[in-house]
Image (cartoon, rainbow over the protein chains, first blue to last red):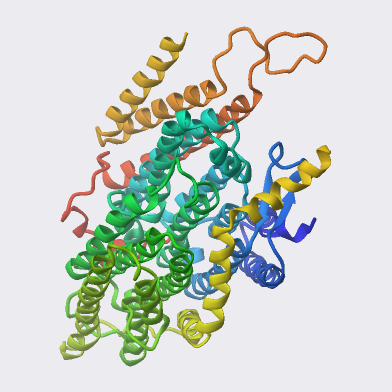
Length: 507
Length: 124
């Protein structure tokens, strides 16, 4: 039993109380500790990903209790990839928050940040459905604090909406878990997979209800239509580094759908046959359209970026809806890409907003570093909208290839291509208004805002660099992800890894 | 027994949904609490309803016992929903004090008033 598997949960869980209670009066100490924690986490995540690249599914039995009775953490390729993604994203975001001083505009930023990481890592690692709920709550309660970090009228009100929406979602999650437990008698994911496959046809109706309820819960997190309405208000009003970190939150929802619907309600389960394709595909199509129109119609920069996140989630879920191993691997590639491109855009938007004073999409006094920020915006927009040469282009191409065999291929292609076109128009409009039309404005009154220091720009560049790396190393990454998807669809390996030791013990 | 529990869950859920749809801070808090009560009772009943049966398996006698796992789940759910309600109350209070009203719905144009000066300068 490899004890490093639990490290991504334990490390932030230990660090966060220290940050909250010991280092709360010393921001320098807190910054150093938080950054050290993030670097260590990245190291652990890289180590786990390398470990996982060689071997099969690894299981960590908490307290050494045998599987369906105790709680297990499961590390497979998907978990390893998501952990690595979270760790890299948190490094970039944390650097930005420290360099721009966002962490000092309210209290307990670093403690909440670490709790958030703990919740996200736990959700990616857990092999127990109820434990997934608990980690969801951990990451949500930390995100409530981060969302209203540094306060303000608009932010508090948007935060209240966000909290109410997610509390209702959590209640629904519990209803789904209750239904699942009542019909199968277990909540361990591997054991659930066995129970669902052995279920008599008389009981499948309730399991189907539970499966659809769970889908709704995860769709709320993943911002799928018709439950995506919370996202634009939340992301647009959250502090920019927090919005960049939240780029991974929607992916937690996508991850949960992928995990539960491949391992537990896989394609071979008669009870839930077609649930994902029937429900997710239309929702994803409308989500892409809603995101594209939102980008075009937004009057401010931050809501526009938030809508582009909605659109990218729609594209991602279209690939998931195809529900084949290859389409799933393209979905995972697009997931990596959209996380970093959303983060890069939000971090960059923070620099722009700081230099302009607001995020309204109107011609105003130009920002201090017009050329540099415009170039960065251009690059980030290329990434988000899916133009070559960045990974967005490859990602969308792969998603389209992934859904090619489906009967709804024409619809998916049309929606993705037209959605991309509308998004490109929206981004082009925003970029030209902010960076070009502004240069025609008179210098304006008052001193020029101070320029961003190199330290403040590096995180944005890092995020863009990761996008570039994703496109340069697209071959190896796609290869790893294809093996990940193959592992997901072969649920017997997961089930064996978790339950076989118990069976051997009972003999 | 079954009818009582089922209708209790139904009434609590219906009340909770109705209160949440009022879209004002206080009714929403009450609504979320009602919903969490409903889900707690629901979770409790997922281990089958058994009256007068301890959640302990008696090895030496054939006495009825009830499923202990839902009771543990309910305990977790109660603690979490209690904490979440506390957070909700604090955030609702903060939003009320900032905005001077307790409507949860943000109408278009309403949040256009807080331009740069509002956004900055609240580094408390």
